[in-house]
Structure formats: C-alpha cells, structure tokens
Amino acid sequence: MLSYTIYVSLRYNTAYNNRITLHEEDLEDVKTFTYLDSIIDQHGESDADVKTRIDDDDDDDDDDDDDDDDDDDDDDDDD
Image 1 (cartoon, rainbow, N blue to C red):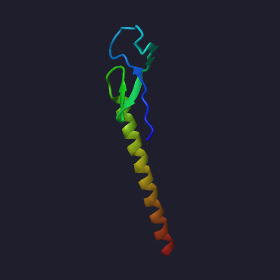
Image 2 (tube, helix red, strand yellow):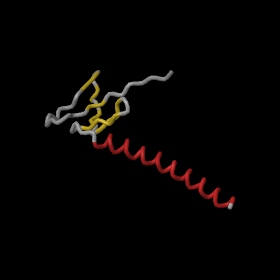
Image 3 (cartoon, rainbow, N blue to C red):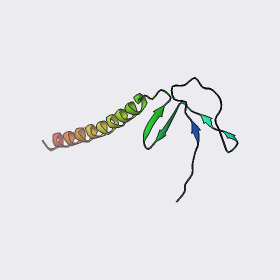
C-alpha cells in the first residue's frame, strides 16, 4: 500500500501573514483543501463542498433519465 503525507497551511479567518515552517520548510499556503471527502476553505464555509455534492447528484440523475428514454424508444418499436 502506498502512503504519503502533504502538509499545507490554511489560514482560517485571520490577518496573520507570517509563513508557517515545519522541518525547516515553509508550508504551502492554500485557499481550500479536501479532507475526508469534505472541502474546507479559509472562511469556514461549506458552499464549495455543498455545490460539489449537488453537482455530483445531478450528474447521476441525468444518467438515470437517459436510461428511461432508451426504454421508451424500445416500446415504440414493438407497436
């Protein structure tokens, strides 16, 4: 099993701008990151996470609708 760790810095509602260092290396500043399938942003809001989940559900629903249309076409051919 492959395992790796990425360290990033997310500033949460702060004006503090000093670099954060770990093992003598500056951490990368990010505006968002994904942790345990949740999108975390610098404002503590979940808008991006909710939008992503809704968009994924819409894509799944569209696939189901296409299957239903195919079934209707088959019924018309039998008549």
